Amino acid sequence: MKKIPPTLSDSQNPSSDDNVDTPKLSDITEPLVSARLRNPKRPDPISHVFAILPDADKESLLCHACETLASLNVMSTDLACDLEGSHRNVALAIQQLATLAELLVNRALDLVELPEGSRETPTPSHH
Image (tube, rainbow, N blue to C red; front, side, top):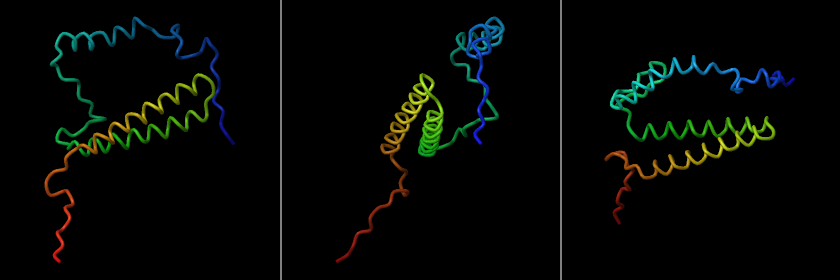
């Protein structure tokens, strides 16, 4: 049995501007944004939840990016199948952007030079 989520009325719609406490949100984000604008060389705060090792090689980073984009592609396609109208169009647009980004990453992977010794070199045959 498919679970149908409750529909929100216009007054309950979380994307409605009426429900966003803009001054409170501004109070939270403004100091962070202002500090970053005053000193662009200031490093972004480190998140210990999601971190990339500083010594990760570019091939690994590109491979993981490609896998992540492929997953996003599948998820957004599945989501689009469950939606109708403009929401479906938005999900399909996200899917197309994920596909484009995946193609770009794959092309970058094609252009990355592998380190010496990792390439398979054909062994010369002696006749």
